Length: 130
Image 1 (cartoon, rainbow, N blue to C red):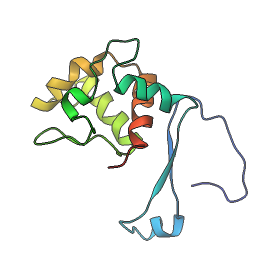
Image 2: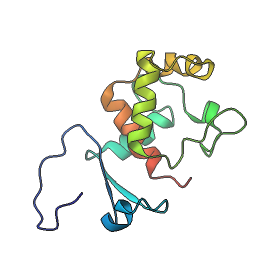
Image 3: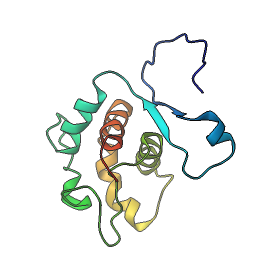
Image 4: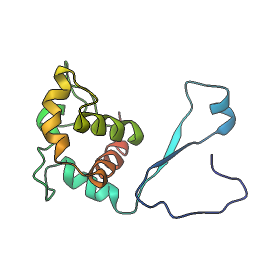
């Protein structure tokens, strides 16, 4: 939650997601919206990685997740997802914690991503419409 009295601290290498309306969130309203604070520059860096323009040689996401990144068939939508969710999924695929058939396809791609790469990709994807 954002403290109404203000204050700040360095974000560092993390993503912080908070509800836009705390009361709505506490009532467990399914329409609650969140705002994500991400490291400076991560959205632009993430866009380059998603498009395959990054320095690590990662396959462009659109190669499997469709040009609009909204997936199709068994391939999931990644556009507009929560950045915390995306990082968690990528980390689990990289570490082997997710071991299903779809995860096996993603594992070689996720293995090339550093934690900073994952944060950047997630930051960019969150800016897109679902």
